[in-house]
Image 1 (cartoon, rainbow, N blue to C red):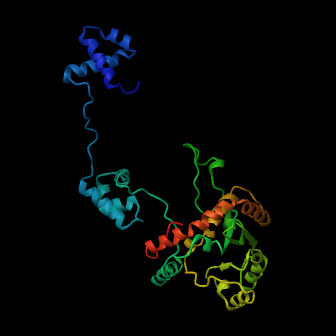
Image 2 (cartoon, rainbow, N blue to C red; image 1 turned 120 degrees about the vertical axis):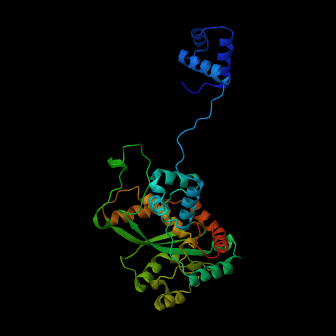
Image 3 (cartoon, rainbow, N blue to C red; image 1 turned 180 degrees about the horizontal axis):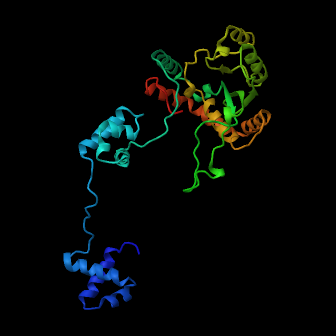
Length: 331
């Protein structure tokens, strides 16, 4: 039986004070006779119907210990709970679970660290300068920008993935992430998107140099270009080579030439790659050609509204970079 409410305890004591037997009270209220007896004995002893304070196990860490644990974790966020315990000497008198509990109670919960490119001082300054220069653009202006990028689609990714399962099911086949030696197989693709939802996806050679990149642009860029279009690509060597610059000049392509380095968080197509890879991961291709077929299928099925929302995020992205003084943002 669950916890007996205060009102029910009050009824039990009232009936007992009227001279009724414990068995009668138990029968009338539908409560076990043992429960009735314990409540009555507690009332006789303390005169109270409320639960008394329980002492529980004594705390093994002092307030000073807890502050030290939290201070060390904040100073060295990549330090494990065991390392913190060893460095503070807490493990001599308390368990590793105690250290973890102290950290959790202080809001310092373990998480998988986000991976972001390393930024040096010069790159941070370029990000700030770029965002200040383009902060006045509206969403309509951004929708004329063709964002492009390359990405590798893998059959057997080594990235961590989360699942939901019950206890003791960790090694059941349906809950395990299958791996193969040497990482399986993959394909390299080039993609481009535009603010109206139009997009293009091209399968690339295994290695992309200036000539093969220009061949990809021949196949993929023509249908997206119009008189108002501005083409964006990052600072990869094949993008910034002299021959590629001359190729784009011959085709009279207006290029967003001052894209800041190490800034995938400013390119909305990066978010589209994450969506695409998640969808492709649900399939089970056995060859590179099948992997390409599933990739192209899922790319075409992405809703135009998804791309529109990514373009809407350009202004918040720029504001976020300016707010954090050029550091990486959540996108």
